[in-house]
Image (tube, rainbow, N blue to C red):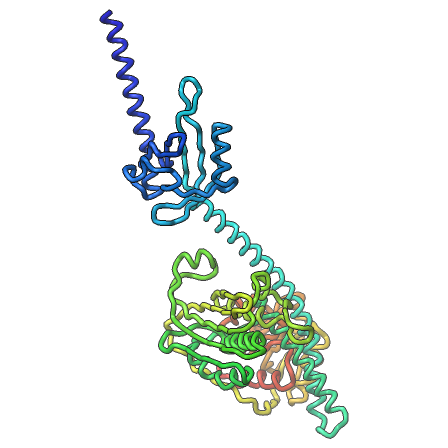
Length: 526
C-alpha cells in the first residue's frame, strides 16, 4: 500500500510540474493567448496579451472580449466568425484589432473551442500573432518593386530617347549650320532671307526638343557650379513674372543663408521655367503660384524610400499652385517623355521629363502631391554643399572673330564634316578634314607645320575622339582639342559631367556658336 501511495504522490507531483511548465510556456510565448467562456467573457490573459493590447490581466479578465479588444475580421464579419467557430469548433484568419490606446493592428488569429471529456464545449481559446509589421513590410516591398519597375522603364525610355536625339542632332547640325551660312551671306531684303529664317527657327525648335530628350535621359553634358538657389530665384523674378498670366499671383518665398547646391545653373533655370509654365497652364482662370526654398534634413527612412537620395541636409525647392490638380493615374505618368494632358499642339510632353532628368543628374529627388481640384505641389530636394558660391558670368554674344590657325576636323558624318569645314574656311582658318581617325593620323603625320586645334567627334569608327586626341598630341604636342557630339559620352564625361580640362561643343551648332567656341579654345592659355 505504501508503494502505491508513493506512486500516486509522484503522479500528482508530476502533474503539478506539468501544469507549472504549461503556465511558464503560456507566459513566455510571444503570441497573445486569451481564454474566454462561451459568452466571450475573458478568463485568461497572458503576458504577451498585456504587451500586445496594452490591457493588464486585472483590467481584462471578467470583461467581454469585444469590449477589451474590438475586432474586425478580415474574411468574415465578427458575427459570422463567431458562428463558424461554434459550428466547426475552430476558426483562423486575419483580423484588424484595436489596442487600448486606439492604435489599429493586424493580427493572425487561430480560435478553437475548449471541450471537456464528454466533448462538450466549455470555453474558447484564441492565439493571436501581431502581423502588422509583416503587412507593412509587404507593402514596402510592393512599393519598392513598383519603384524599381518605374526606374527600369524610365531608364529604357531614356536610352531610346538618347539614341534618337544623338542621330537627330547630326541631321539638325547640318540644317542649322547651312541655314546660318546662307543667312550670313544674304541681305534682309533678299526674298530668300525670310524662308531661311523660318527654316533656322524650325531647326532651333527641333534642337530644343532633342536637348530636352537628352536632359531626361541624362545624356546632356553639364558644367555644375556651386550656386545659391534662393539668389538664383531672386534673379529670375522678372522673367518668371513675364511667363505667368496677369490673373496669377506669384509668391516668392526663398529663405536666405540656407547653403548652396551643386548644379548647372542653366539647367536649374530650365527646371524652374518648366515648372512655372506647367503651373500657369494648370490655372487658366487664375490662382496663386508659390516658390519656396528651405534647408531640410532627410533621415534614413526617406533614403530607404528614395534609394538614390542620401540622408542629410538638403535644400528644398517647393513650387505649388492652386490649379486643377491631377489624379493618381496621371501623376504616375507625368515624368514620362511625350506624355501630356494638354490638347494637341499645346504641349510636347517633354517639360516635366526634362525636370526629372535634371533632378536625377543633380543627385536629388522629386515628389509630387496633387488632388483633382486642389492644386499641385512639386517638392525637389538638392543635396546641400558647404562651398562658397561660384561667380556666374552671363556671356555676351558679339560677332565671333575668325583666325588663320590650322584646324583638323574629324567627323564621320559627311554632312556635318562639310558644314564644319565650310564654316571654318569662311572664317579664314586653314582646314584639314578627315572622315575617319586613321585618315586624320595620316594627315597629321604628313603635315609638317603645327596643327593648332583638333575639332573631333567623340564616337567614331576605329577609335573614339579622346583616343585620337592622345595619338595626335604625340605628333603635335601643342595641339588643342575641341570635342563635339550629339549627346554625352563616358569617353569625355562621367555621369554627364564634362571631365575637367576638356572643351566641348554640343551638336547641333550654328556658324556663330562654332566660331565663338573655337576662338575661345584657341585663345585660352593653358
